[in-house]
Image 1 (tube, rainbow, N blue to C red):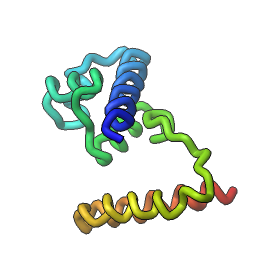
Image 2: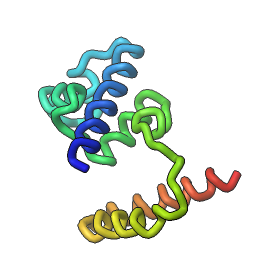
Image 3: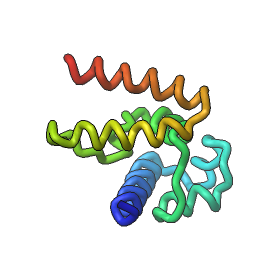
Image 4: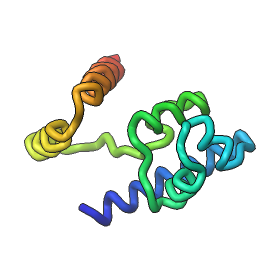
Length: 117
């Protein structure tokens, strides 16, 4: 599981760099837009640090992309995986603040509604 998370973090970092270079921004410029330390941003691009969900949403706004463009997610889950996935989600949610839960609720409804189209 840790290896999978590290791979995902590296892939997100690669995507961050790809869009930054596409817009011809420096790491410092993007870090300033996100109101984070430029060194931390550089580490995130190299897959050594992780941006918060809020910062990733802000980054997507800067680049006018969806979160799906930044975070590669397989949508091909098997129905038998449902209980395990729900359990993992519950574990994550139990550690969130009320503000984070509110944002997750909005995002979950958007994802559900998009998938129903």
